[in-house]
Length: 251
Figure 1 (tube, one colour):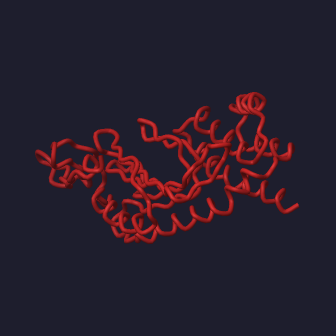
Figure 2 (figure 1 turned 180 degrees about the vertical axis):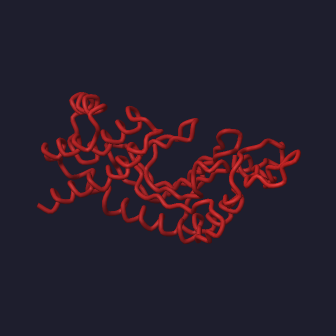
Figure 3 (figure 1 turned 30 degrees about the horizontal axis):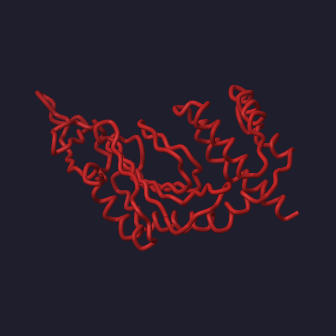
């Protein structure tokens, strides 16, 4: 599983007949010779093996287990999913979720070398992640960028542990205030508002965990993944629902 994502890559100058300098380079798989991308010379190659080697000691120290390793677009994008089997929250009778860390890297500039924490239900065939994103940190592929990936993963794990031990249980146990459903609906654009309302009518949320699930379902099923606005809304969903739940729990 993991071996298929750790293939060697190299940089090849994008030059040819009478072209000695183009300002670009190819990222090439050494095992197959396939070109994964053409990027500018300012692009810093961060290979999968380095990302994996830096993340692994931190993840093993925190008793994480590798559960998925997938490559997309012939290896241009890679996703690894790690799970914390010893930490879990019961979100329904007999239904548990574990915290997870998704490590991602790309050779086509589509994503940073990143660590994303949350409770994820699915990684789709196009690399789309469906679930509750709690923290997202990354290192950009830019020459001169010397970000510490080990520290990035450590900080992401720390955030995740706090959410699972303190925040998720509160969402699951706190009964919802009806006016807060209206607050959530107003966060979404008019193009999906009716779909969200119909979803809530069909499955009325009783707790703030239910409300989080409704919001996540709409963002992943009814909103365009190619629009920046979708990702901005997704980044606001969990903080807003946590804020609302906290205000009720304290009352």
